[in-house]
Length: 93
Image (cartoon, rainbow, N blue to C red; front, side, top):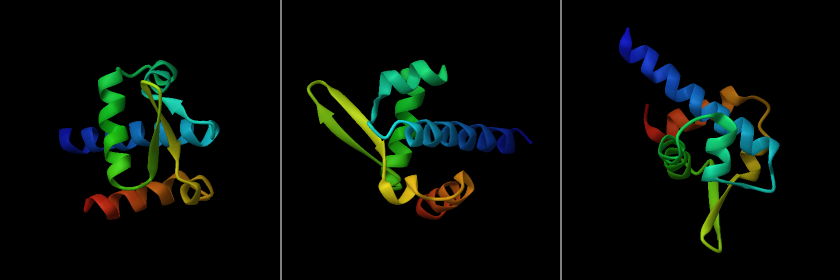
């Protein structure tokens, strides 16, 4: 039961990040994502790393900051469920 709750919590966090990046095509820093979602910067960085590994987002360095963007093909997906399904496939879960 606890494992299912943890898995759901992770998917919810990733979904929130994906939604946020979809609404901000200009890109957001890790700190901005953290502030907007109320998660710690470390937690956001963890989930961003997973999304980067699954090639759902990309980062661009601007000065000292890293701007995060949702890849165009995922920004156009109809539902978050499609993106999460793609993430599950790429992470092998």
